[in-house]
Length: 170
Image (cartoon, rainbow, N blue to C red; front, side, top):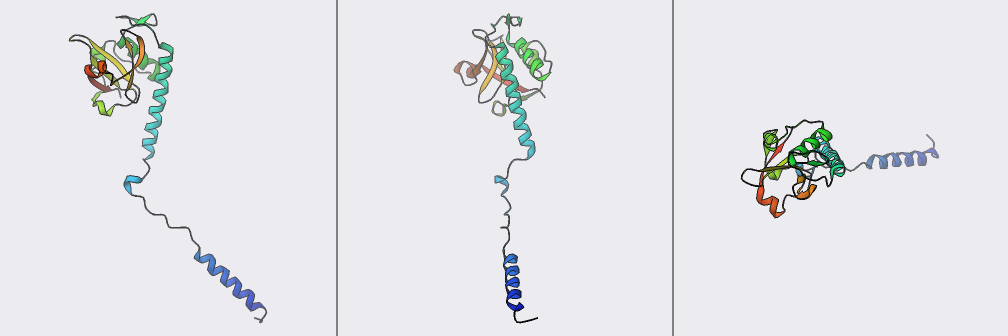
């Protein structure tokens, strides 16, 4: 090695040494409470969003259809027939015809656990039951006796007072 090549060699060794010192910052393990939810949660959220879109599309086709006790068509529909249409058209799921029969389907869930597509039931009188399907944010879709097919709020004083139970169709 000559004296001339020594500075080049020293510069090369210095550059290699600097390169060895630079590194990516070490990734810190995440705390379990700050980790992103598993992909299953993302799939469930996407499924619920898809269900909302299906339910709202169904609502747009039926909005304002008048209530008719025993009715099953767009000329007039009662609450259980409307929910039967919703589940058949949106989810390819067949439900029984009456509110009391629908109230025996799936599993009972707490009101606080409601998810899009769950059935919500009400006692409107001693002998009369009513059914709707939960959307999100406290809203449900149903055939109202006074306004036909509409979206209402669970926390509306009328519905809140008459809430009976909720069921999830699996």
